[in-house]
Structures are given as C-alpha cells and as structure tokens.
Image 1: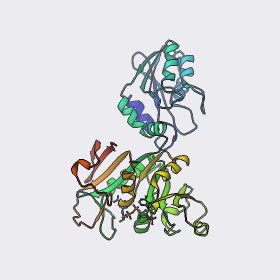
Image 2: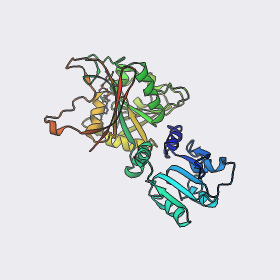
Image 3: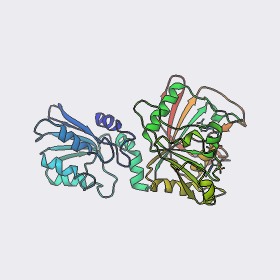
Image 4: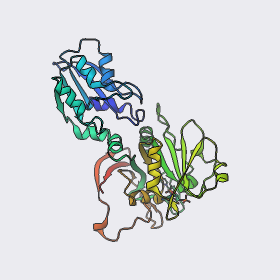
Length: 356
Ligand SMILES: NC(=O)c1ccc[n+]([C@@H]2O[C@H](COP(=O)([O-])OP(=O)(O)OC[C@H]3O[C@@H](n4cnc5c(N)ncnc54)[C@H](OP(=O)(O)O)[C@@H]3O)[C@@H](O)[C@H]2O)c1
C-alpha cells in the first residue's frame, strides 16, 4: 500500500478534482505483474492502467489500490467491472470512496462477484493522501492550508513589512513542491503591495497553480508580477462595489469576480465558495497576518504548515502570522493537532491540522 501511495503521489497537482490513486497487480508470491496510476484528469483510472499494461493473464491474481474501485460510468467505464471481467481474485483497498455515488458500492459489486475484498489497509495514510478529495466530497468546499514562514517567535515580517528571507533556500524549495500540488495559491492585497510575489512554481517539471488575490477595492497595481499572463488562470476577488471602469484597467486574462463584503473586506466564506464553483479544490495561502486571521476566524482552514527559522525578531510591532488574532484566556486558544514535523537544513516544518 505504501508503494501504491507513492505511485499515486507522482500525479500530485494533475488530477484535480479527481483523487490520487495508484494500483499494483501481483501474484501469490508477491511478484509484481504491473502497476498503474491515475495520471491526469480525464485519463484512465489507476486500476485500468495497471490492468491494461499487464502482459499476462490476470486470472487468480490480486490487485492493491489505495481507493475503492469505482462502480459508475464517469469519464471512463467502471473499474470494478474490468476487475471482475479479468478474473482477478482478490482486491485490497485502502479506503472507501467518499463520493456518494460510489461509497462502498464498488466493493459490494466485487464481493457479489465472488472476489475476496480486504478493506482499510493503511486507511489513515490513504485518507491523508486524498485529504483534498475527502473534504470536497463531504463538505463541497476546497481544502485550505495556511502556509507561513515564521521566526521562532512567530513573526512573519518586520514592522516595516520586510520578510525576505526568513527561511533558507531549502525551505523555499519545499514551498515550490507545495505550489505544484495545490490547485491555487491565495493571497491578499497587502502581500501583493509589500512583496510583489509571482507565486508561480519553479520546481523542475512542476506546473503553476492558479493565483488568487483578495483585493477589496482593486487597489493593487495592474503590473504586479502575480498578474503576468503566463497561461495560468489569475483570479481577483474584489468587493461588490468596484467600478466596471476600474475592472477594465486590469489585463483581460484576469478573471475579476465581485463578492459581497463583511466589515468592509471581502466576505471570505463567500469568496471560498466562489472559488470552489470556479473548480478550485485545494487552496494554499501565502499571505500576511490579516488574511490568515480572517480564514482562521471563519473556521475555513484545514491545515497549517509552518516553516520555522531559528531566528528571533523580538519586536512586538513585527507582523505575526495571524494579525489581531486575540484570545484572552488560554482555554480560548484554537487547539491544533500536530501531524508531522520535519527538520530541514536549518529550518523545521511543523504541520498541524485544525480541530474545530
Ligand atoms: N512570512 C510569510 O510567510 C509571509 C507571507 C506573505 C506575506 N508576508 C508579509 O505579510 C505582510 C503583509 O501583511 P498583510 O496582512 O497586509 O497582507 P495580506 O493578508 O496578504 O493582505 C491583507 C489585505 O487583504 C485585503 N483583504 C480583503 N479581504 C480580506 C479579508 N476578508 N480578510 C483580510 N484581508 C482581506 C485587505 O486589503 P483591502 O481590503 O484593501 O483589499 C487586507 O488589508 C508583508 O510584510 C509581507 O511581507 C509574510
């Protein structure tokens, strides 16, 4: 199953809104006969690719797959039917498909055809692999990760908004990998004005994420790097009152969507729904403390990835990763669950899940 998961991961950033899936066919001596993965959206499912690349008769063989085989006609015919047709005798699955039109029915179909089904192998790892898909299917919302580069004392910029560079090149290379795996990067007008980032993916073989800017009054400069037309979608979520004449001043490839306001800023809950409707299933923020705070306060964040550099900034007026995020009592703190830590060259990555 670990090998299936690693195989599936090779398609990160290519299959949305579909799940990441890998499949391996093997015989009773555990000799691998073939393997396959879902490579891109619209392409064959993993099981189909594994079956079609096999050079031998599959009768009596086993298939292991991190997600329950499908039983419905989507862009391709049901994988469960193909497994039955080829005489495979055993299916080992990591997790049940959270898609309500499958949800256990794929495994049921296999069982009723007399196939041995083993379900739930490394289930937690499989759920983690497809965390975007699970959130989309169960909540009809994008999976949202807040990503920050912070000093040991939790600062993301100096009081004069300087943040280059808190973390080192090794951390920044990791960020490129993350950009490659999320559908979109979300930021606020503050970061565009102070940092002028491009938010593209410079990883070898990577692809650019969609860039999204929350800009209530369309006050960001039209020539900001993030608005460069490099063939990637760029979206600005603006306030409902912005004028059409101001909209026309932006380059025509930019999608500008008006959104209702809350406290004179973009209503972030509505904005996230708009982005889901626009097909964005996973979003990583790379923004300042103001937007991070709004996302946390509206209980929209699923995960927090902090790149922590062994530096102390100290200044109480330096910028925190969530600005104005005030709790008066310890028992009022948001409680997160740390799911992993990784020591890089000099920095560390702490990965936590929100727990609302
Ligand atoms: N170390 C890091 O990881 C990191 C990453 C990014 C940025 N930064 C630093 O963060 C600083 C900028 O911080 P910032 O807080 O000004 O930037 P920000 O969070 O990127 O942008 C905040 C701005 O977004 C707009 N906005 C629209 N709707 C919003 C909503 N619902 N909630 C919050 N904001 C909304 C607001 O301006 P309008 O209403 O005028 O549009 C607001 O002032 C810079 O110093 C930058 O270097 C650090």
